[in-house]
Length: 350
Image 1 (cartoon, rainbow, N blue to C red):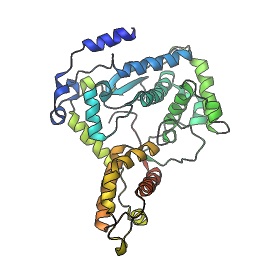
Image 2 (cartoon, rainbow, N blue to C red; image 1 turned 180 degrees about the vertical axis):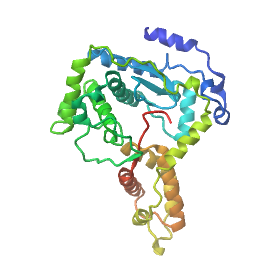
Image 3 (tube, helix red, strand yellow; image 1 turned 135 degrees about the vertical axis):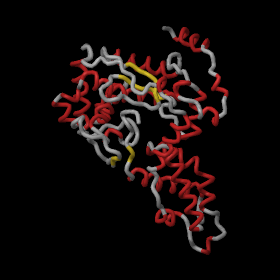
Image 4 (cartoon, rainbow, N blue to C red; image 1 turned 45 degrees about the vertical axis):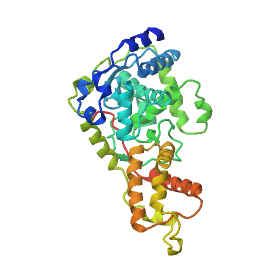
């Protein structure tokens, strides 16, 4: 179908009644009552691009897609679930208001995630994890997924594609990340990863794709796991669980770091309060650290709230150049975030 035809189809679609509702009312709606379709949206255009990239590599396989609550490619299913909020601007606005982040919200990020999830779907479709060479390079797919993992930012054994050094979390994620780097058009991965042990994995993926690219998939299931149309959960219940999930990741105490950056000296009582300084700069700091680390803005917001309260209780003052102090604080928060245990993103719906 041409772009003009797709645009026409999208233009003829009636705007749902809930698009005009308040957040409070929208949160009472059940997922199955949203009646959403990814066709004719930004998501379809990204999927068209993914298919073009696969075609350029002469790969026959195409993952099937459906709408759910999260990005995922479930174990045993050679397909990709797309999060509901990406297919309507009202739901994107709600997502941002609830969690501050829209994962896959722009074309670049959406394509990055789609390539990763396509790697999972390829692995399931061709049962690649059963191969000895796969297990030798990436590890055993049967390894349990961890609740948390501690990445090594300096490691050269893994490619770097999604944020939070995600390839280090599990053998399946290592393969999906490696596949995504290999698939990306015009990516100079041979030069980028020259002299890295990760290059062996990329070369293996290239050999593997050349071998299977024209074969039919061994697993041809078209199953939809937790499809939106069958979920009786309300949007409010969903976001309540998401906030609880992210909140448990926030660190508790930063007194040692806060007292290094801000002053407790009585002689500095005339300087601005550190709590007000952080409150005034929280949005810029939050976005900056999120971009550097890949951590969810919602989690960082919770941490910042705790820090602001602690600065208030310790009566700390912001002394010195504000721009430099803002940068120093962002660097401190980044260093702490990188060294905390990162929460594992689920491969299956929870």
